Image 1 (cartoon, rainbow, N blue to C red):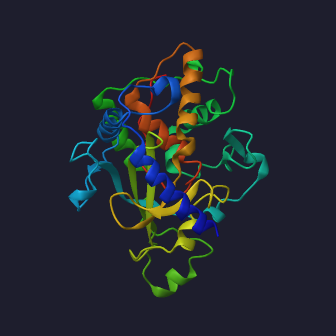
Image 2: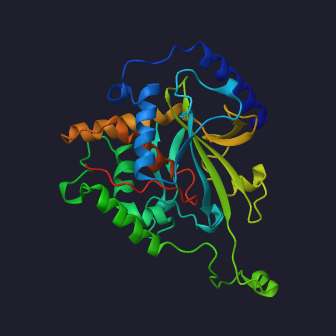
Length: 312
């Protein structure tokens, strides 16, 4: 029933998108939305600082969106590792954090491991403080969460390259053998190698909601497509069939997991409001970097690249 409802809703939104005029006036700070041109600016910035992301275009040119450049239709990051299932991260209600809520029943963004002391993602280890600040800003209006003492220092290009090299030294080799209680099958096979699931991540521009939208396609350890049930193992239980739905990708005929964009503008606007209250501004070029940071609450075990620091 959930799947049928989501399909009907998706069809209705597709019609709505066709009837929605193209946003041409910047309303980034006022409402948290993007124009198509601003989406391209933010995408270029992401690629410059996180080179695992690239621009892409559909194989079928009839699917191109006329309001976007032909060679910059959507963003893609391939072979993103997913080492563990969400069930492997022990749930504790005391660690739960509501990132955003509107008072409409169960419609809320929830990070089930917000206060965890465990570095359950490599990206959290790299940029833990800034993720925490961004998430807190989405809920606690009026609280001064961006302390001067914790501001990220601005980095030039050489510093960024140096940091990437340092981080590469610390990142685990996904093909390296790591002994554990559940590794008996691998040892019996004599391979000595632990394989991992991977995901292809796409970011499209949603013309109806006027925000980025994240899409995911998962592969098992043998590079075979994951089933819907298998992909759900990698998504936060609080967001399945609510925030996360399975719909047809706008640039292909593939059914992919998607994080529904109806709340994205609201969350980004709260972050901008917090920064303005603290006398700080944020450029539209950082939109997708911030967007990917709060997406981590929904897909906590998929280790995509959003490690650029932000000058607060």
